[in-house]
Each structure stands twice: as C-alpha cells, then as structure tokens.
Length: 308
Image 1 (cartoon, rainbow, N blue to C red):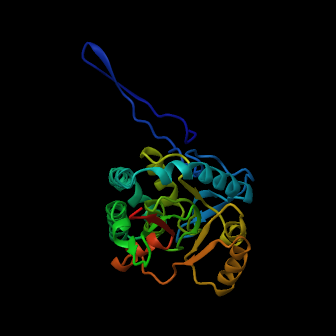
Image 2: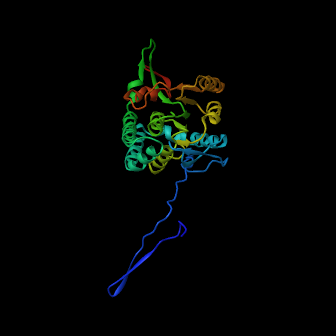
Image 3: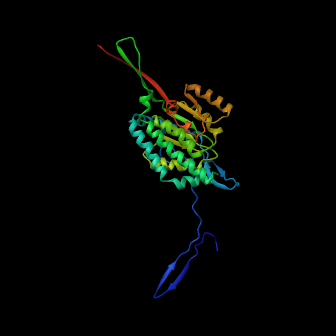
C-alpha cells in the first residue's frame, strides 16, 4: 500500500456500527519564507539552499534573499519609519512587551526549532528564556533612555541648550551566526526600542528560529515594515546592506576582517554609521545594555531663549 493511502479499520459492535479510523499520513513540511513589510513572500530570485542537521539530513529549504528582496525591505522600512519614530516611548515599550508575550506562548515551537538546528534540549530552553527576558529588558528601557542620556548644557547667553537622542533611521543588521534566536533578538530589540526600523540578515546556519520569530512579530502589534527578516548568504548580501543609499546605519556582528573593511568602505559612500557588535557573548548579561540603543541614536541639540 502506498504510504500516503489511508489505512482504515472498521469495527462492528452491538446494534449499530462504530468506526475507528487509524490513519498514517505524511506530515506537511513547513515552508520557510522571507518576512518583508509585514508579509511572507518567497524570494523573487526563486533560489534556495538546503539546511542540514548534524547527520547530514536535509531538514529544510531556506530562501536565498536577493538584492531585490533587500531593496524591497529598505523601501518598506523607510515608509514605516516616520510612524514608528513618532510613537510614544511608552507605546513602543508596550509593543516590545507584546512580542515577548507572544513569544512566550510559542515556547515549544521555538525550542523544537532550536533543537532541529543542533541545540540540546537544555541549551534550547536556556536560549529561549534569555530571548524572552531580553525583549522585556529593552521594553523597560524604551521610556527611560531619554532621561538617562539627555542633558541640559551649560551656556553663557540668555538661552537654554538641550541635547537629546533621536532615531538614526533605517538600519541594516547582519545578525550573529550562532544563537540563531537570541542573537537575532539581541540586535533587533535595541534598534527598534530606539525608534529605528531594521532589515536583519539572520544566521545562515541557524535560520529556522528566525522565521518562527517572524511569525511571532506578525502576530504582535509591530507595524509592517518596522522589522524585515531575510535569510540567505552573507557574502552575497553584505555589500548591498552596506552600500544602499537609503540605509542610515549598518550593524555588523561577525569577525572577518576583510568583510569588516569592505563594509566600512562601502558605508562611507553616504556617510552611514558603521557599527560593530562582535565582542559580545550573547548569552551574557553584558550583551544587553542601553548603550546599544544609543549606538543607533543621533544627538539633537536645540536652543531656547530665556528672559526676552
């Protein structure tokens, strides 16, 4: 009998007929897509790569995002920036907390994905718990970093001088290769907590949890375009992340010196901010701090006359 045919056993009893169906069937494999502008498109190139487990078995086909996919994500991020940056700090805090709540409700799904990628059950649970806690941490900072990092500056004239942070704008991020879920959240959360929008290229070796997390974002209150998640090859996309003229900053988390040099050179074309976050152990508490929010802020200074 073909494996996809149903096996049915009919049991007759008493005055009537009771039927008990025992069905063996193939499970429906998950389709892993990109996440752009609040939607789940396939890559426009139609390309994909095979993701293998430790035994060499294929566990998923992963989209290889193209330059066109990245450009679409940048356009969506730029469109969403104005609304997101204008939201109150308290509202952004609520939305980040909502992401944490939704993520908590999908604990078993995310742990299963982490284990498929080769993480032990204990390590997967630890990474998941740290990921939820990190979202809550940055949710708490949304309405506080302004107070900590703003200042009233001394002057000699009849005016006040204030300095305060405001969002840099559209940020492209190359997420850490290891800790697929925690690494993604650790670089994405401080970016959006500060009112920026972002496009994240996730781990090539551990992309499953990133797509699961995109579903969490989609089920939360995050406006479309604020976060876009791309899968694919870093060596194909890094130059686009660094050179795009409508990107205001790029965050790089890897250690390849040649890549870092190339990224900085290409970022300088439109004087975008090039930031390197590659010295963190993402499981350590030092990998979460308000200075990461400030790395993606511009300091604006205003003058206000007095005594006139």
